[in-house]
Amino acid sequence: MGDVLAGNHAVWEFDSDSVLIRFARGMRTPRLWHVLGERRIPLEALSGVSVNAAAGAMGRRDTVVLRAAPRPGADPLMEAAAGQLKEACDPYRLVLPGDRAPQAVAFADALRERLGPGAAEPADRFLVAVPGPPLQLKAYDARVGFDGSAVGFHWSRTGASSAKWRAGDQHFALAGLSGVEWVSPDRPGGGHLRLLPRDHAGDPAPPDHDLAAAVFGVGYGAVHESLPFAAAVLAALRERAPVGAVPGPRPSGDRLQHLSELHSTGLLTDAEYAALRDRFAAGA
Image (cartoon, rainbow, N blue to C red):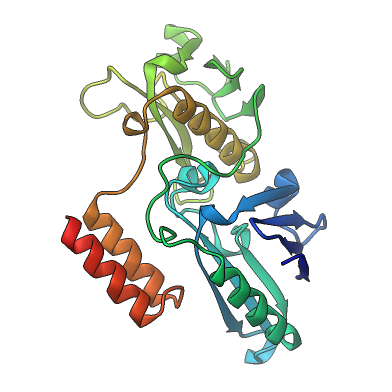
């Protein structure tokens, strides 16, 4: 397409096979976007696109929102986020002045035409890049490091529980992990980063006692720091392990639920939804 659409805090540039998103830096721009800088999203990583009017001051329809939807399993950042990002932090959401609605609709139509027949199906591999190691994360009870092959926890003298302090610093090779759990620090009660060992049986210990987890707190493990870290570890795990060893394509029931979500938000037409629903149901 070769067209550019400038929104309030980002610029989207559409090519024939991808969308380049450049995030602006500013006090009103989410700090996660500052960290991301720019992202190239292959069109094969998208499942749909929508344009909706949004109410502004005093309820006036003075903005329009263009939103692309990533395919499940295509973007490690969104997989790690697992639906916990606030709407304003969604990197696939572009807010524009209301008078640009015609341009937004035209771009969405052109983008939609380039989505492949498998756009609604989960991706079998990650298609969007994330920050690479080495990475560091300062949590409330530990400093966490990732060098590309292992994740290490160096416990804090003041923040770590006595159980963690007695056990000593921990080191987890990627070969021994099956996944990563990220719980946003913005959620009530705080969040955490937890590694999921392959050989672990039973329910995990609470994060403040789990030797494979780091606890977030006020000023520690903020979204813009901890989410890219979790996504980088998740991406490295997917590269090393068979797809089935880490969160991957959804079973047919989840696929149908995902189709329903896309349809309800306007990302699939009635005809597209019916055709894909029947195909997935037949293959269940």
